[in-house]
Length: 241
Ligand code: B12
Image (cartoon, rainbow, N blue to C red):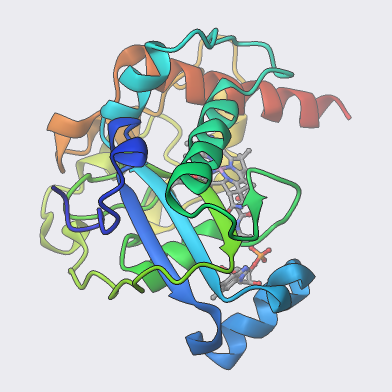
């Protein structure tokens, strides 16, 4: 069990949705509550906010074992579809009759990384994706749900950033776009380099892959290519507009 796995649900955990944080909305800071209300007004109808993520490889293995075709078509969202179907099954079987709404995946623009900070999952890394001591950067936010549940609230996991003790800063040196120079992430350098014909980061992130933290949890090549393939297609589409 990892320190973020606070719900014992076999449905979630067997699907690799093994990171959970339950917040009582009324106990959030006033600032966080206002931001949430601004971004998703429905918040006022619910008691709890549940953040669900995956850490490590199990999620992809479980997704691959379903009939979902892991398509590279931008219109197809097997990761989100699989997550939503597991979350719905979780509510049907383990929180039956409870009102809930899935806000992510969806159209709402709440910062998942800010929620991850509140949950103690997220430390900033030089390469923009969050990092934590258990999974390194090999975790992501898969669902955010508002619900009238009475689940036990989770205590934020307190850890220091693994980047703190990293003396080599190999990610900064290995970025072919020099997009991490000076310890800051330069999105434009990253994105412009990724769009080049002979880019080494078209369907991967050389800096992220070079990070030694929790490399045993590193996604498979197929999963890395899937996620970065999607983001490069989104970037290319935005550039054409
Ligand atoms: C836009 C986006 C991108 C854009 C980046 C554009 C940019 N300007 O940064 C693009 C398309 C390039 C991108 C790519 C990728 N992304 Co992206 N992306 C996002 C997205 C949708 C929003 C990020 C963002 O703009 N955040 C800042 C915004 C929300 O700030 P804001 O509106 O100004 O809000 C501020 C305040 O109002 C306040 N706030 C807002 N809401 C709330 C709520 C609370 C409670 C509080 C306290 C505060 C608060 O905080 C913000 C200030 O920090 C997030 C998902 C999400 N909804 O968070 C994923 C996300 C950041 N991406 C993610 C990933 C993994 C990637 C990719 C690696 C590919 C992928 N999809 O797997 C690539 C690689 C990036 C690269 N090197 O090229 C992950 C990171 C996971 C992690 N472990 O940290 C996220 C979290 C998605 C996920 N499902 O997990 N991405």
